[in-house]
Image 1 (cartoon, rainbow over the protein chains, first blue to last red):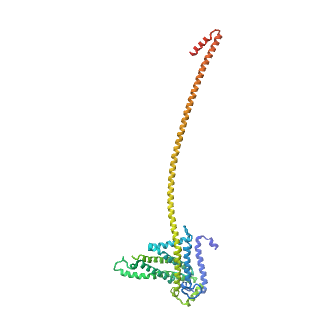
Image 2: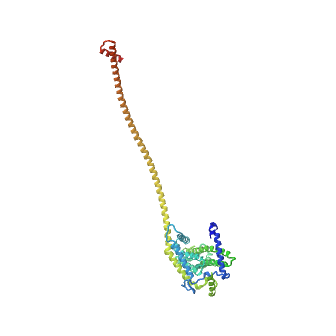
Image 3: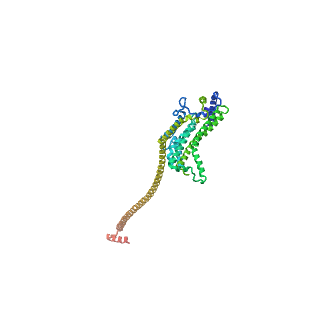
Length: 276
Length: 178
């Protein structure tokens, strides 16, 4: 440690990497005593009782419950506790809260127009939940709520139904003109309408599977590489690969939350302004 | 890691090979808690967080606008003050030159008056002096006459000529006059 402190700051990253690799070796050595190379990339997604063992009922408190509650706590911490000061010159947390607010607000306004702004709290809710679940899921040994199709499908279906109902309430049968592309040649319109209808109903599927699939795939890949770390010879490579994929996952966590939110805005725009 | 391996063994006998995502028995649980979570988040956001952030942003915007307006106003005030200062300076200069002129004129007047007075005094003294000089001159002439008369008398007496005083006087008077 003393030698490390003597080194100039530019060599610190090298020492950190060395330390990480050393730690990885030690863990690999401890781990390798028990098990052979074993892949359990999907175990992290299991929904289990949070207290004790047994079946999972509808109202059982599970790890999913726990991590969803943590995301609520995180959101409250950031957006409520972080802005408690109401400072004119914001603190760091307040800055982040304001950035998140401004980011989603501007997105809703840009995509759906002025009349879409009143749905901003709903989109903000979805975005904040997804982004917090994604990032909490990046913590080691955590559970990623948004990697479950049950979760994303409920959100996607909620968006789909809300948008469809809103479309008919706002525009009546005129909402059907969303399928009738008036800018296309007349001959093509029926065919395009058919494609539009199909794509409209595929929306909730793609909307939900995109998010769950991205989260699941990234986490599973990390676990696969983690399993390779048990073999001492390739564990450094494995650690590097995990680091790289982790960095990618950080990006994906944000981007998928953003994509979910912006697609919600796009669907909402269709409901508010169905005419192309 | 150790717990994971036991869990895996447990999972193997509990038989859910493949994706836990497709284990439909956990769906109601997840959906229930998701709905609870979303409702709670929505309430927290719509009741507390978003209005607060919106008000903070609006307040900041207002403050910035006000500050810009205030700055504009202050700038105007500064320009006004500068103009007033320039004007005051010009006035002061004019006043100063006026006062200087007045003082100069006053002093000139005083100097002139003093000159006149001094001239008058000098003239008076000159006149007085002249009178005195004339007096002295007259006195001197008289004294010369007297001395000449007395001298002539003595000279005549010394010569042994008996002569009337009046004749001596007349003779001296004609000689002095000539």
